[in-house]
Length: 341
Image (cartoon, rainbow, N blue to C red):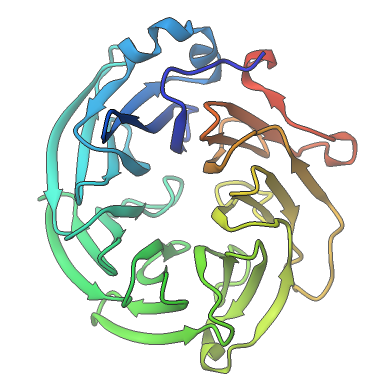
């Protein structure tokens, strides 16, 4: 059986290149939402923890959280409902965490964080998007705000740096707009408003086509947009992997198989699909997991295991999904039933 964790509403998960896992949850205690954060060195360590001790190993946050990212080998950032970004120090003693600072800049919940890929980046920039509609860039050497971008007239759901490039980033919001910003000038370079008012809650840059942005919409579809032609509101290609809003999406950018796109949704499903570099044909290599029983909000590719993504959801479950042998894979396996090296 899948391990039943202490806090049921998993919001986010992030894997470091050595296999370490940061896990974030929110839960309602009385009339207050609070959160917990855990860190584990690998899958098997997480699997070995008895459910009765999860709450002991978790570190309490004064509010719920929406996102978590590894900053470097010993620092984790969390996006919190109180409008703050917490930086956590991960020591060498197993699960130990210490909150070392808080960065304040948003007027409402922080919903999304992004930092360039560990495999290629020595950048000290962090990107955040909030329910106040703003996007903020942060200097992680001084923990100070560098710039604030009035990106949306409603909440900003997701922010993403272009692959290997911290000079350009995209944001998407509840105002049904996708915005492109030049971080060097602080100027808006492009904005598209969906003609049907369809909201995109997640975006991801295509790793093989630098001018292509994938957008995950509230109807469960994915559209591929050419950022050079955003005013024309044209999609180069589209998929429809889900029946309800897509909450998060990621290409496997830190892998030689970077053309896999994983999506998670409020339809409780995880979908992984091989995307053609030309976008003019379907690869017909698809994977779909229906193992979650509630909203799936957390998604991360694990670069320590080839072609493996992990998901977490409001059902308190964590699953991993390997697509190395997609032709014979039909479902995911619960974490507690999997062997790890």
